[in-house]
Amino acid sequence: MPLRETIRVAVIQTTLDNACAWNDPTRLKISIAEENRAISEIGRGFTDLHQNQLAPDIVLLPELAVPRGYVDELARLANSLGALVIAGVDYSPPTRLKSVMNEGIVIVPRYWGGRRSAFGTTVRYFAKTYPAEREREAIENQYNLRFKGVPTVWVLNSNQLGRIGVCICYDLLDLCRLAMYRGHIQHLMVLAYNEDLLSFQHVAEAAMRTIYCNVVVCNTGKYGGSLAIAPLHDPNRRILYQQMGAGLFDCQVFELSVQGLAVKQASGGRDPVWKSLPPGYMASVDLRRVNTVIRSRVKEPKIARKRSVATVKER
Image (cartoon, one colour):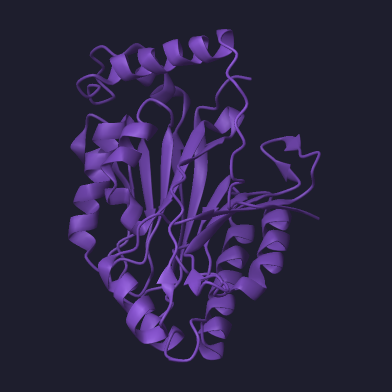
């Protein structure tokens, strides 16, 4: 199935206040007041998207933006809009070993991209690998819990819409992760709750050039700074979307190139539209193809593996 020329991405920048959301020292769970405000803003964002003449293909929500009790309703909203939803959810309940995870969800609606899913609406969880230092200290010192990171790199194959990488905030600084994404994706979606906006913008631009893909950062509206950037040659067109200003709710739809970017990734060469490929990029793509051929020809012994933390729910 050929790639589409562009996809439409929506960013719903909610304004969850971490100081008010996690202010109970007895439990690491979003407060009732902030939960209600988060639900109100998410509903407002989807109402705005329903009124948009061009519905988005993908909807992003920031890190920790969705209360866990609202996931089923969010799946219903994804179904009604017909859009893939990638969103951060509240911390997982503590386990018997007193560990918690910072997770996100990918919701695939029943009908998406002109195709019907045989599994109905699918909800899959993915987790953050590395906590920020302040996040780790707060979890350990205030709640006497342990952060559990999950060392998994996710790539979503969305057929016509290209291949999508997803990560949560601090994981964007993981150089090994960026190297693994290189040559594998057209889009990188980052869910964030980040205060240092200027540094994160520079990191996003570096990731865009290193991986050579579109990078979208959906940050909390408490600080602002959500961003979409593409490896275009013209610096005035490179930033496709940017929101500046703290304490602002925002809901915007923009387009990302798919087909043109994929052609550039595969062919290289000088191009008036796109930046040049980074050094060694074609070698990494060729190595991936060689490894794929080797794996298809060599029968590897079956080794029992621990199941992934990610789960699938069928409705």
